[in-house]
Image (cartoon, rainbow, N blue to C red; front, top):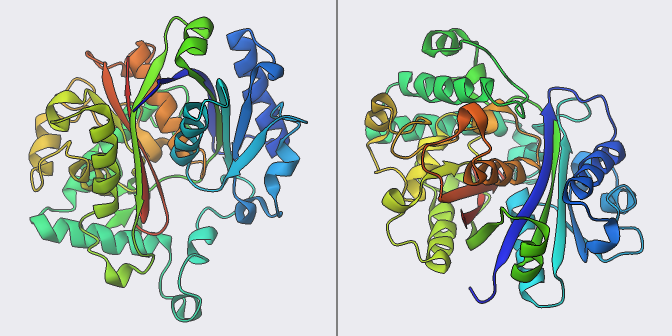
Length: 381
């Protein structure tokens, strides 16, 4: 990748119910970040707002956020997908040479103001699936979980182990919305079924939250911070929306996005070179499934990896040391929060969740039914 882009700062927050408006949340995140960096809104060359008209309940919803984001009468554009896509867009704008800094703002009030599952239902086929009302986000994820478990002969207990590890990490992270102290496999297994084999604690919680992040060119980054985190590689890919035409036990779009990001970053052996991964796994089974697609886990070895502790904070390849999306999933902002959590790790600022070695990290975001669209970043110090 010609030229260098760095993440120089971020602000994030999430909760089950923030009792706030989109405008207020946007202002608090962006104003706080500018204050952290000691700059003003005129120092931001372009702003990218990541929101969704359908979830916001209004057309061209970014128009209402320009002012609170500090982008009034400034260069501004919009991304409607997961926040990792907005970071990729910001990088491309900076690499164009037209901008030295780019602010990315993503938010989702899917804990208090809108159904978190409704938008996925409207992504289904209008001619059949929406009419029959047989499929929704949760039971489609359950189908994916069942197919994945069956492919490798795993038991449902693996889902309990994955969720217990993620929720244990989330309990220690002050930025997470769902923080349950002392949760273990038994507590996960005792939670209610949504659709078999998925239980409540295997699934993401409806969450309010957001994240603001500033990216900068190499020269400007070194002026703004002494802890730049470099975007080494990026990639994205998408599959057909119709799950009947997909192998739900695999994720070829994640594999392709990761392949592109690794090639750009010069990563040859991700399982050995990547120190940690922040994965937007909305359901317990998606964490190993997506990690396998990114070459971080060997296919068919997930049980061994989790039971040996390889995926823990102190393990060989820590997966979601923050707890990931099982600790909170504000739609649109979730992937950007994964990026911010990876930045915390690479800066050595992750507190009780800090991994021992953190020099290369992967951050992932997804959209659509059963992770239809995926985006991957490789970050380094």
